[in-house]
Length: 421
Image (tube, rainbow, N blue to C red; front, top):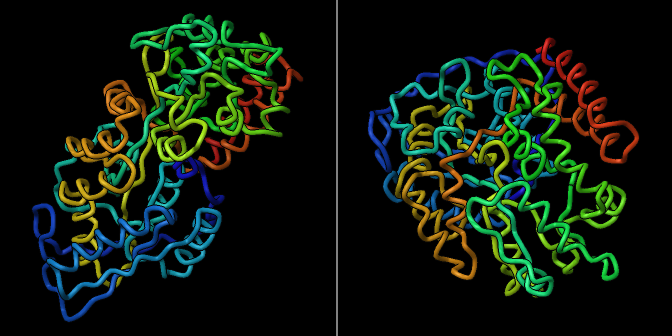
């Protein structure tokens, strides 16, 4: 589900750091009962995706079956309100016992003491390392990865066949992509080779920046990479496609989203995530006309990886039970159930059912991408510079200023924001 990768709410401002509580759990994995459970306990579990609520309730029931004294109440808050509601609850010291966390918001919650670090030794090697790194702050792991998503090129086989263009192959390059986009563009029919979308950074700019050898933010979180020549090359990959008219211009993509254009047969190649399988398999036009290929290779092969983690409140009244539930959610047992009915589970080796659910698509593409995936770029106040990205890069996408100028201005603004963190 695309929207879980973006920043929800702004900064907390001055939140008083919440005191951490002792976990009091035994080592191990799966459905192990917590120590010192004293009578019936009800845990609140906050999520934002209505489509996943049923499988989350199944997981909660499985946990309670093995831990009869612990009930779990799954609380759905739609994405549009999730972060606002969570911020208000956390500020009042009443955050849910366990809740979903995404990368862009993670450091803000960890640095303000809203969520509790995992104090028990866990085997994090069962999850992709970029996701473990994403949910690690100041050397401490705060969440167990629940699911993951990588990016691929969804392509319209009918348009490829009509233009006589071979389908994308493993190992194809930026040049291959650009040449295909040119051949697939048919101005007379209103068909474009691709769409150089702005704003969906996980699917677009972050990938090509990484592929070009550039970076969005330095590993220590203190410096913007937008003034790096290689980062600029990653941005120009997209603006050059607009200039060549192999992509719609920004106004067109604002009026009608690239997803809508792709599902109308007006875009031949759409950069999208593993979450798009549900959309494309259910759409009458795309369900039998599209497939997916790896992202093309620039200076190197790369894709951005992201995923939701389960975290626990630092002020939960039931730390032992909350940790036992988080640990269960991060187990192989839970991942296998999730893979049958939800997004790609993060637990290595449990993704077979997810791939097998839609044999009409080459979904193994998204799993193979994990080996060359880079983590979603974040800092303590990701929301602030995400806003700066959109403000400054819009000027480059419209042609108001050269890419180099927009990138330099963005780097300065971003560095100022990072200095305030």
